[in-house]
Length: 191
Image 1 (cartoon, rainbow, N blue to C red):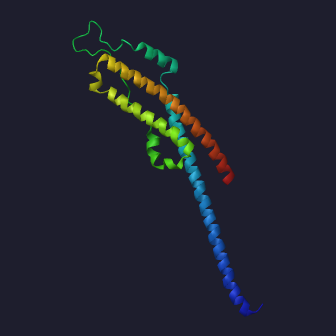
Image 2 (image 1 turned 45 degrees about the horizontal axis):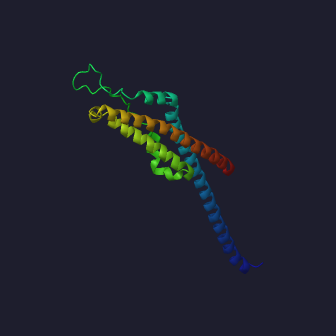
Image 3 (image 1 turned 45 degrees about the vertical axis):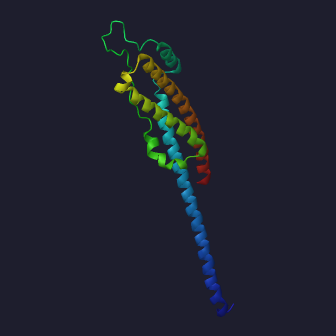
C-alpha cells in the first residue's frame, strides 16, 4: 500500500471509529438511563407499598368489630331522655389522619409506575382522601348540629369508607408487590 492510499484510508478509519464510539456511547447512555429509571420505579413502588402497609397494618378495627360497631349505631346518636335542652346527643370524635405523605411527594412522577399499579394505587389514595375529607366535615360544628339520624348515617358512611379503604389497600399492596418482584428480576438481568 502506498502513501497515497493511506492518506484516504486513515481519515476513513478515524471516521468509522468515531461513529462506532458515538453509537456505543449512545447505547451505554440509554442503558444507564433505563437502569436509573427502573431503580427509580422500584424505589417509588417500595415507598408507596410501605406507606400503604403502614395504614393497613394500623387497622384500628378488625372487620368483625367494625360490623359490630355499625350494628350498634342505631339509637346511639339520640340525646338521652334526661339531656339538657340543646344537647345534640352523641357526637363521635373522628381523628385527623394523614396517610398520603409519600404519594403526595411523588404524584408528579406517577407515570414512572407500571400501568398495572397506577389504578389500584390511585383508587386507594382517592379513598384515603375522601375519608380525610369526610372526617374533617365530621369534626365541624355543622356536623354536631345535624339531626341524630343524619349524624348516624354519616358515621355509618365513614365506617363503610374505612372498611373499603382496607380492601383497596390490599389490592394496591398486591399490585405493587407483584411489580416490585418483576422489576427486580429485570434489574438483575440488566446489571
